[in-house]
Image (cartoon, rainbow, N blue to C red; front, side, top):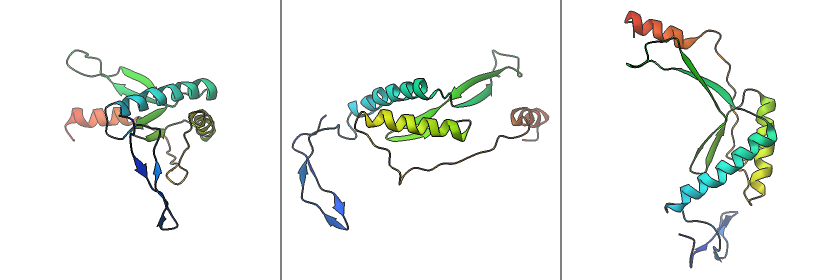
Length: 146
């Protein structure tokens, strides 16, 4: 589970370094790896929410199935972060909230010896649609045009 008798090299300027012992960490692909990731980042995200006071992006969905007849009932929930393996997607309503999230997340994860990869970081902005696309899609399906 933990690294034992493992060595690594780092390539710098195209040349491999001398090998060195790996003394900490969990191997990728072993069962505890995703569990430890979930524990650590679950804690980190809760701390970010407390410290930065950001809620994420509001999503809505319609609960229309055989048991619920009302197709107008929207359920709302907020999503701040999606995490998978060692990747994170943060979603905020404003650039100010995103900046607060990044600063807080970086500070909290640094306390655990982690750093954000600036080279692998992207920022994407989206505009909210002016009209309710859920209602339009529902009307198209009801009329049989989809």
